[in-house]
Length: 265
Image (cartoon, rainbow, N blue to C red; front, top):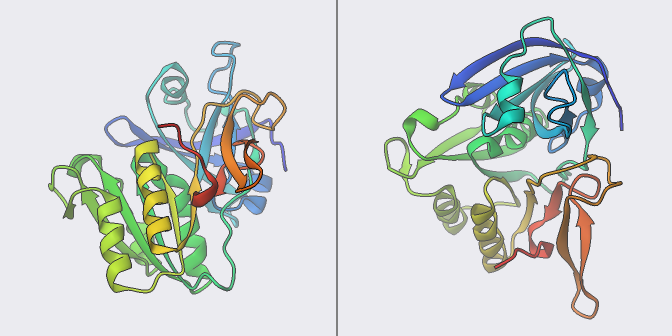
């Protein structure tokens, strides 16, 4: 783990309504980050709000020493992030978390994300493409105007599919439905997903029905971000005889095999 307490904002732009992309100069973070990891970011220059915000790494440029984050304004903390300007100093911790497994056995992979949940999947898709993996990237959104641009993925050779709730762009339906259609007709080695909890529940169901290796990234409110406060614990299965236990999303995750995660009904 690297902790960089003084990084520099390169850019901070609105890309669609309520969604922003921020580029941050942090060479050591950029060089060591893995897809699925996050930074713990201090959103204010004061003590309010007190807690940092965990935000997935969206992209990185090793040569330029830059990481990018994708965030949506949903409260005080993320609204404060929009006020940062180029050359401002920003306080971050990272990269944190375990990252997505990506080995030799994952040759053809499918990634399914919804909303800002696509952020760690974009990072994964770009890295997998560099390793000559075949990547199917499925992005879900409410409508055409809330879809996030994925030009970089297309340029990298990924197959990019979109699904919108209202049918205004791409497949009319949820990304999970589009994923099921792919699994019915093609061989996929591993599925990766990040998004709203209802979506992840469905992804788990699909993975069990199709007996396919699946990893999901859990989104959870966090306190310390390094596993000390236990504020982000989630329930996971150990085995049939031992039942379940609790794991820290920040330190043991945020990536877990889908089949072990216990979702509350």
